[in-house]
Amino acid sequence: MTLISLGTSSKRLPFIPSLNRWFLDLLFPRECFQCQQPLDLSHPGFVCESCFNQIVFNRGSCCSCCGRVLDSDAKDTPSNLICSNCLELNPYFNHGISLFAFTNTGRAFIHALKYRNGAYLRSDLVRIIQHEQERLQSLQGCTFVPVPLHFFRKWKRGYNQCEWITKALLHCIDGEWAPILRRTFNTPSQTSLTREERKQNVKGAFMMKTNRPLDCTKTYVLVDDVFTTGSTLNECAKVLHQHGAQNIRVFTLAHG
Image 1 (cartoon, rainbow, N blue to C red):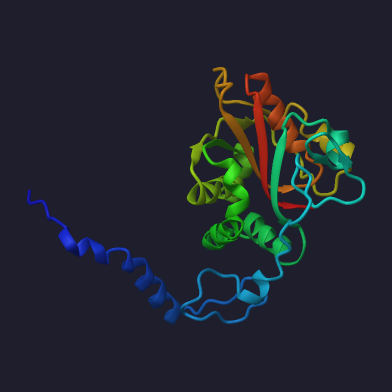
Image 2 (tube, rainbow, N blue to C red):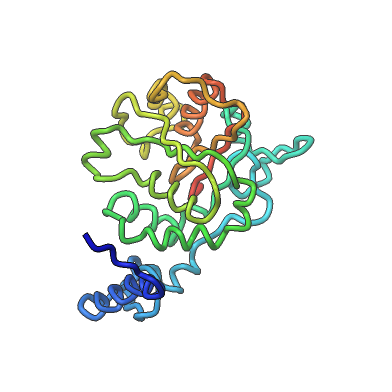
């Protein structure tokens, strides 16, 4: 069998995806996922500049625990500002980052990613995370744990959007991919539930895939799409804590 050496011709390989995109754009012109405006051939992804600029990124004073922009209800602790929701939640995690508010383009983007077979939006997902990359430096070298879907829901949907978010994060910063949790039962949707109902809905819904103790020297980052009341993330963090994790953080795309 003859082995073919790519040599200097390998430098041309990165252009192949670009040529494929250019050819596909000629046959099937792209439009913005939200406003349906036609996109130029040179435009990356499926979010136009106008809609991208409508994403309300969480800036300024944010809750150190969940990452939402703070109101006047925040409590000033010796080293952090904590929102009233996190004070009530009494979380097993000690730090959180949430990139944007669950409004406008941000809300539409997550709905498309989650419910409308959003694989085509994964390059836009990386772009959004890269836009806030400076805020993510504290997560360098961490171990990232996507919040799992029940196997039936993942089979029905075809994917777990939290895994996509985690992989997009790892495209932007260094870290370890660790899908170590599984969902024990298929919980009803949280969308229309009250705070207490959400808490009860996910109680006992997660467990470790193995019984091996976790490395207490590592920082574990739970990854989810939206932080609402924090019930799901806190239940996951509880499991990690029970298995030896000492430093647990959370990352979400949105807070709402």
